[in-house]
Length: 233
Image (cartoon, rainbow, N blue to C red; front, side):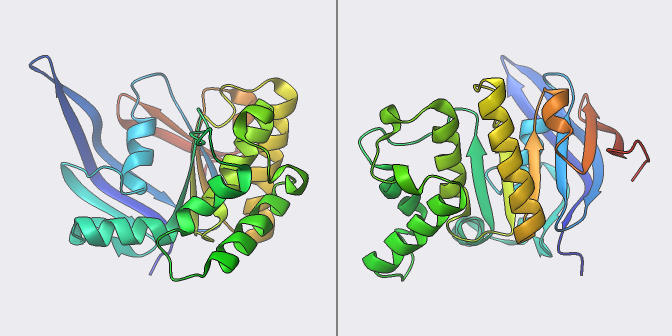
């Protein structure tokens, strides 16, 4: 069974102001495990909605969403929450760190509901911060970090549970070029060295070049999947 991502005939609509908006329109898309994908397309093309479906933050109206061999439609709300906690790490454009907590405490949060002891949680969080190059900032609060450091802290939080999938929504959108490059290099390393499957939504063609494959969406439909060498995948 494919441990990657398979979307089959996926449709998603929203109703706003009495108008039905088709965000994903019978989408068929298969993505291999252990690859780094960039999702691109104009605003409203369905990129973030696709990310939310894969991460079990939302559900499709029709079609199959199969992630890591798991048919998400077959799971109830509690099972989805457990599956998401065990399998997915999220990285957002706005970092979403808690201001009153240190970097170490922020990174420890996803482990709070596990059976790990407090000492084990701190050790895991410290390792994750070391992984992203922030060992010397673990006791700093977010306001004491640069934007790039905040995003690396957010990535540490995303990987602390050792998920198979990392879903990143515009992770470099609020960063300067140097900080963005550090974050992209980190994502490349997580993919190559740790085998994480990464889906990154981006508007930035330069950021997309960090991915192995670029998925182009438009109006909820797949335009194509291209590798960085220009060959169709």
